Image (cartoon, rainbow, N blue to C red; front, side, top):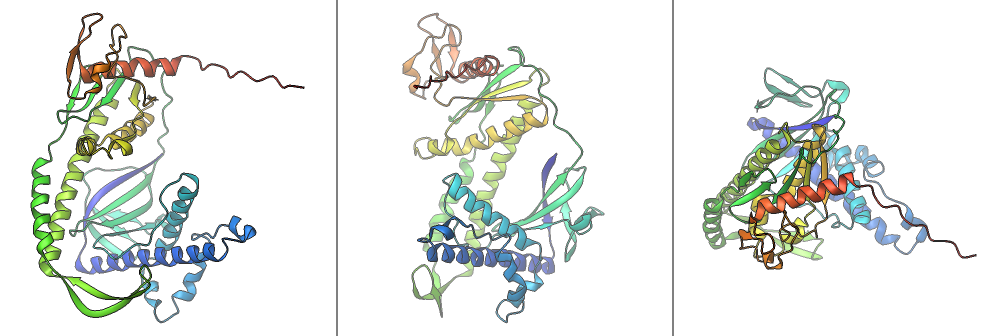
Length: 414
């Protein structure tokens, strides 16, 4: 089993320079490989034989590196970690595969920012190790690290990343001997349904009657709004230099932000990251509490279209704050780790409108402002979210245990 552990690191000024070199090398090679792939497809778009051939950044474009490291303009690449180019090529190939097979966005060129990341692997299990609580990687030794959570196993690779306000993080991928447990036989008593809410009060509700409150980030959002207004008044001054822009096809005057502009940008980035970490902590706490319940061996959730819901400006803030997509992902892989069944029910199933006692469908509940209601058919009083969680539980258990209908084969007409 492979698991990733994230730790905050505190590099020295020398180590920061080395990281910046690797971030720039990873960005430069991504843009170089992407430009070669785009040029190749542009030249051969009418040639059917060449169109079927895939130009791989991982296996073909990386062959240019020995020559690039000898040239005057790009000889600085030899000072970077040599293994990062392999992972840049692999990520670019995956991005193109997702673009063609899964209709995702086309890979774009990366611009110079205050953030960055690169990946290095553990060659022969000797180039990445932890000694005296400090991280040691290739060409960079004794990086101070806050190891808040111990891990067991062999380190496979490490990803070093930097946030916009001088926040460095190491993501360590570890392979251990643990084996995923076989899921137990589901029963209705050991099944739990989870309803993810979009309201400010409830982040998630379970069929057992548990309600998990949504974290409050109003203070941070208000502060961000204030700082962004200040940022809009700051100036980005011209430097007097020009550069050729491939996007616009002409020479453009280079501009540089003032020091106060950069300071405000870092403050805003820090607040955004604080919100992200608060949501991440709350999501981990909820998913762990649900999965680690000893009386539960089957977890049922709705397969919601979170991306589509986020486009609705009435509920977009609540959807982002509830971290609904991440919660579903965490419940799925944590259930797999702990040998529990995980079921996704149809997103169009009316879990909030149906009475969990008699099955009566109350169409008035399309209004999400109604938190409690009484069934007009059987008179049962319901809490909206708990009732929905019970319906999700029953529907998930039904889809898991009922045999699937056999497809009828059409008789061939002879």
